[in-house]
Each structure stands twice: as structure tokens, then as C-alpha cells.
Length: 148
Image (cartoon, rainbow, N blue to C red; front, side, top):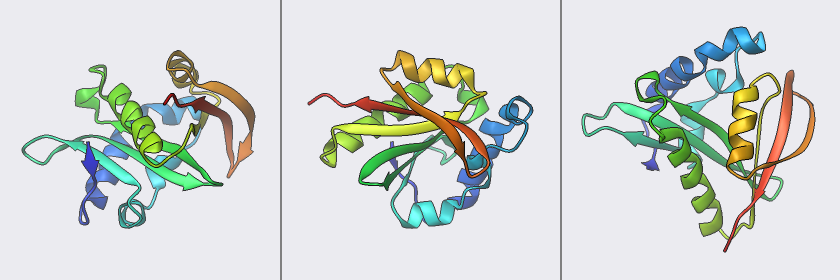
């Protein structure tokens, strides 16, 4: 996992488009990561990727600082790599990066209709901190205390 490089914004957007496309009918709208500004994410140092030696992107994670805490804003895995543990690896990277930055807590949100994701995050030790509508999305807010 490494920081995304300038010039990769289009590739990150394409990866997010492919990864989140199956969720559109589930949530009834385009998930936020499909329309994110990846050039800005890269410029702020918030976007990290896993790439093959060829340069093809296998996955991405966006970790942003908001309200004094790190937020796991987006985890996306290219469909060809789905089910191989890459999403788990990206989440663990974000947690380790949050600890490296001196945080004892990491937060995230997911859409309420993305029940599979809510269950995954629970399995990884995240607890529900609330629900609400934000920017037109019905969200589940979750957080996790980070060890050591």
C-alpha cells in the first residue's frame, strides 16, 4: 500500500466506479465515492493504493482527518481482486496509519442499505455510533478503538 501519485486521479475514479457499481441498485443512488474528487484527495495525501507491477490499480483507500479524528472514507477493490482479502488489508492499513499518526480511534460511515459492509466492519471490531442522513445518504456511523 502506497500513497496515490499525481496523475492517478482518473484511475482511482475508474476503480471506484467499477467497485461501487453493484451498490447503485441496492442504495438507489450513486454511492459518494463514485463522484469523489480524487485529484484533491491525492493532493491532500488522503488516497492510498495497491498497484500491480504493471501499474494497474487493484484497490484504494481514502483516509481523511475530520473533526480531530481519522475517518476511513472509502475502501474500493477492483472487481478482479474482490474476495481475495485486499479490502481487509486496506482497512488494516488505514488503522495502522491512524495509530502511526497518534490516534486511538478511527471512524467511518457506510450506507444503511450496505448491510454486508456493516456486518464486515462489526466483524473487524467496529461498533455502531449512530445513524442519520448526511449529504443525502442514509448512513451508519461506526468507530473502533485502536490498540497500542
